[in-house]
Image (cartoon, rainbow, N blue to C red; front, side):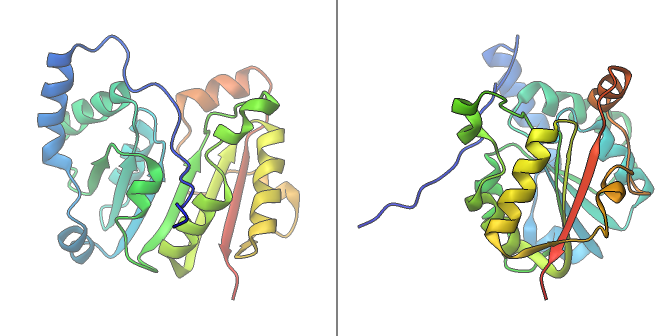
Length: 220
């Protein structure tokens, strides 16, 4: 029997958090756990962000779009703790759910054509060639994203690393299911209207790096 090759997220799980801290965080996360059937019925639209970091940009988008469900995925526990703290301070925000598992396991939670948007913003670029197999954008992940996106859904990739942008363009072209929505590359240099800049992005811009906002739709 052939075993399916699985690509798992690579990164730190926590920094300076004790076992007791992690257990307490796990308890606090329960208030924002995703119930796919219940939550999808309660909101008009659904959006998943893979690798949301501290989740604060996602939180701001959720504030601006109360009828859309925002699902934040992150394995780094310190990032999860930051978002949970902000949610606890903003109890009126009801449209955020948190999933702290590997990205491909999270995508496996959803049925076909169930998400309006899947986002991958500023993932670790793994610049050394021997490490590029650790990049999250791989054919297997693209297959999973294509499975869960609605026919009119969007896949967004944002990065300030040109090599990773070209990598993603190449991988999506080879995959054959996604079509870029931009008419020309200049459109990729402009953030969408709904964009909320992150702390990382602000640092990148100060250091003179260009951000690229690449959007794909499903081929008809």
